[in-house]
Length: 220
Ligand code: ADP
Ligand code: 5GP
Image 1 (cartoon, rainbow, N blue to C red):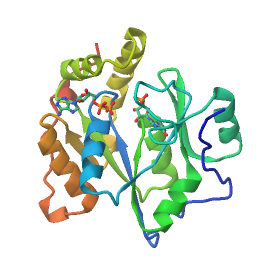
Image 2: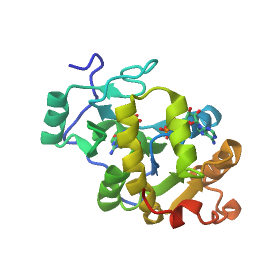
Image 3: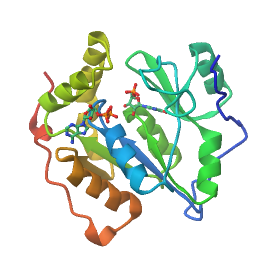
Image 4: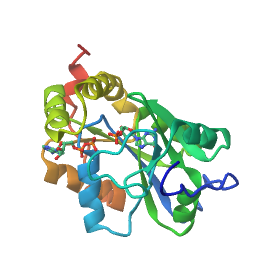
């Protein structure tokens, strides 16, 4: 059982209408690309932005808190949430389940917040189907070598978990063009500026990102 209960309400339905006062933004990219780092900085500058807290069956990493970084739940609890349709989307990633509880999202969007879902590719595709008005941003690494370096230097995953994440990274990167916007996280400060412009809505400042060098690389 999770030590913090997941706020759930199977009757809650997010309204996929332009009238909804808040905005939902989907933020995706391969593990280790820097999504968490970018969001941490963005939220430090814009504390009014809300980050959706996912449920996961993964074990907490050092420093991760239940109810803050994730709701850490058992597989049985997760499957019960799926069965009860309490998740907006869910997916299995590197051997663990991850999913977005609907009810807190509904409440945050209704209160007019910008809410960011940091989720992987399969979940992003589900949200695209159910809530097409949500904007979708994909973060790319400058190269696959740099991605591997970042995952390894983060030092929080086993070799087996790193191998699964890198294998999945090829698939995810190949899908980057499906997303409304792509950001290459090479220089962190520049990537943060791009993200801020997209999230906070300064369309006149938006520039098309250069083509990724990864687009020409084939999976090894
Ligand atoms: P994700 O949330 O996408 O899995 P993290 O935010 O945990 O990735 O970042 C993975 C590692 O890469 C961390 O050690 C982080 O400090 C580092 N990192 C993030 N962005 C950059 C960057 N632009 N340049 C170099 N290292 C970065
Ligand atoms: P990590 O284990 O590194 O925290 O996350 C692994 C992957 O799961 C990341 O790509 C992250 O974006 C994704 N993820 C986190 N929460 C969710 C979720 O609620 N749904 C889906 N589909 N993916 C998620």
